[in-house]
Length: 329
Image: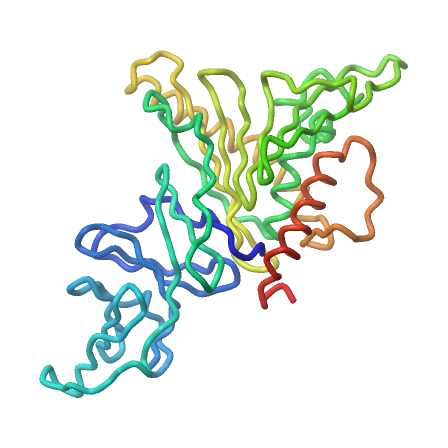
């Protein structure tokens, strides 16, 4: 994982008021809950008393309550109350304090700060999706592979004619021009497919290629946007579970008619269209070995892999700059 980064980890609707949700994210077992103001909180999903999962507990007075012996914890992980000691107890319960994590919500997504200190960066989201006229529907699907493989699949412009030959890859445009890759800022790369039917011509170089209006944008550490048109966009976030598992979350955004009830129906249909395409990818990507990618590994990359090469190079830089987390050492 990339340390000191905001990772998209859950959709906001998955954590409701007065409920506790357990989820493994970034190699950690976590418990998410909301207080009375519906502010999101996250702590380690293990009671400091005897190790029970707090995610099986409840929320009481803005605290998460262990299902085993009723011990209560605030959102910052501090222990509020041990019932067996009585309500009049003035004991110091700091030894029970849990590790907590900084979490925030933006555009109906819960982000977790992967770092020990307070966040030093703002959440880097796609401003174009903050358009109030856009509506979306979301598909979530677990993949048996590292999240880096899922990301790279969405940056791969040369697999379309083969994996998606009967959907988005129709036309057998196997020749890849470029592909051109540009950096919009230090955390955002952009590319696009400039593929053609191969009639014997030489592919255009990176310099000769262009970024088309239909393009792909990736923001570190785990968000991606496919701009199809001004009115249709597909956004994805790639949720790390552990070294061998992830969840692909895909949103179909649109404002095709400008009439939100109808656009919501279109998004619902779009979600199932995305599902067909996503299943075509998943069948192949889950077979790739090793499950986790890196800058230096035994793969023979080609020119068409330039977006993937750029992704790996920058990811490696960010890991080194921020010190790789213990789980990846």
